[in-house]
Image (cartoon, rainbow, N blue to C red):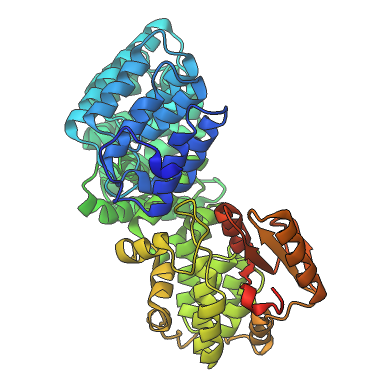
Length: 589
């Protein structure tokens, strides 16, 4: 039983949801049994990593995972685990792994990445690097970078990882061999390093030079103008470098350098876009937006929690500023822009990102759908929500388009709290409170597995915990736990200029059909362990009703009957939309 598993921590784990607690215990229980321990921990980090940092005591689990006796894959997972807990003790352990010559290369590389990773991304909001932890990590990274420079071999991933690190020591290392560290040069530099970079820019690979010019200008400010003007007329500079040098000269030197820029733009394709960019720089004197935005995006876990939202909003605006005039050459900038939008929690900024870079929609999807629903862009939302109909349906229900919400909900293949909440709210707003009551009673969302027992009625312990402790981030669950009044409280008025709702009652009919408890023609799964004779008897009775009994949680199952030890299978069936069939509903059972 998982309840008997002892973690290497004294915490009760009350700061994390019961379902996450259960999965942590499960992963630890299986650590020394079987070959899939690394997979279990990787999956746990992927699906529940945003919660793990809520309990600092869980860092002790990572300390155990990186022990030399563990397999390489488990130790790599341990490094990823400790990246969620940038405490002094965790950083000391990661540094020891990274600096130990006996550490296998895959583990060493993952430890180095964890030392350099200062982004918050989807980690828990309580994640915070202290000044002492930063110094310990920077000291270790300096030794690693110094040794790599001396060897003359810089791994591509190492240079990219060090983009996150603001360190005078690393700046000095980069200055020793700027041609080797081109990939690392992005948003952090000291004035001495900036001057070295300018002097040696011809030794740096051309693909890095525009980025380096921006870094030099942002670091030296007004002092960079003479250097930039010189670069703009250098014969060996590429056309992109010369043009960027002039933009940066305008940024810090103002209108005095517009004439030279206009001359350079003569006969240039897309010259009007370049002139618009020049006007932006004149309005925003002294700002190199990509550099300023990346300085925040690279170190969000260093920022105080109270200032993150505002800083992320500023960084999102910065990273989007030049995208109005030309695409960013590095796709990662769009990814970082997306994380800044999420950090700001701003639907309008999500729209701006998706308009500029359609492929970024998945990263800001929920915010983007909220923006479309709030502005009443029903047709656009229906098209944008094909991959996540549950989120789209809930947004439409909240912002007053219930029939469109139900139409979109009918396309969903996974039953989620958002989908359940959307159906209930849409029925309430469509004038069918009777259906809303039925949905709440008979078609609740799946219950997350939080123990070895089969899930009981919604809400389970995990859902009650989330409703109490995380209502702001889990609004659908919190609303469903409160019942009809809680769901109705989510409703917002529709925009006066919103697209019309779907002009059909077919979505209501689809809900009525879903709530039908008639078994004829339906698929029923008997989940869990039963005695063979009992299972055969149940199957015989069910088949006499005209239903078909299936052996497992295949797609298309309509109902399930719960046996023993069926917690995980029932959770899977519920996610697929199957509903629980109680014995009293079947005559003779």
